[in-house]
Image (cartoon, rainbow, N blue to C red; front, side):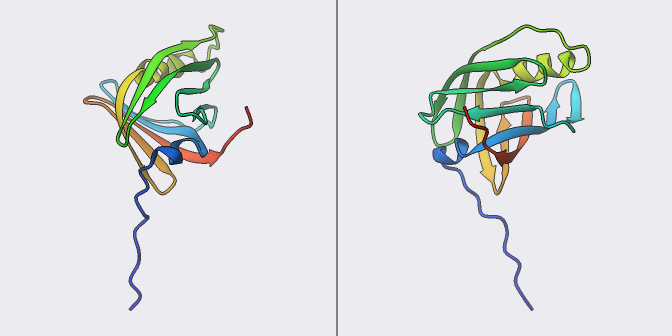
Length: 129
């Protein structure tokens, strides 16, 4: 019988900056929501002191502080175009990203949590800046 191995837990700071992190699931007080488009994402700066991405319509950026288990994000700034089909998700996503979150990388999945919210991302090839 072959023993199956579990995905290795990778929880290093440098793992954060290797990928473009695409949002796939949100759990918060409004409920659970799957995100099927790949246009809601963030990338961490090489120096681990900032992040930027797209909320589905607008680009955003913010300061970042990283320890072994915690990300402190914000304040987040973004452009303010209105996009009818994506504005509700974008507003929810940007509000949830701002603040302090614990993080865990397991394989190609990143989970951010605070006391009330969980955001789940999958790794995709990093975009050039």
